[in-house]
Length: 197
Image (cartoon, rainbow, N blue to C red; front, side, top):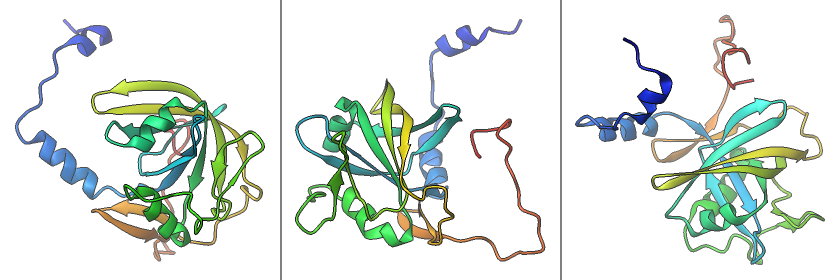
């Protein structure tokens, strides 16, 4: 007799030997897009680099990202009602590195940043950003999954990006370029099948 979805979720979780190591190796070689999240929960601006940004829906436009419990910036982002999600490119690599390095001043005198009239800090040199309202916090072991609804886009957000996308894989930064196989038809994932647009 088949178990219901509820019964399956309540079953005790067991991890087979080697699964954690295999998981870490698989994701080390699974390229992920890079984004910078900025926020100010009321006691000063914070920023961090994430490679966990995913799309949830297009209507309303929503994203999600995970925050590690080990990050002091992540704790501040969890207290914020709004955030700014920056889609970084290869030319933004040094800023992404800065926001990924513990103990660095991400809003120091050598860093160009500004605030929206609504108060959120952001990096105006990043060409594509979205101001977003936090809609849900989902605490998990060692992390928190944040969902956010996009409220406002950067000027020119509809324009095609000329610079390579920045991705993170195997503990290194990479530029992502189209494949040169012009004779092959591109693979499209339809919105009906996934959250990829």
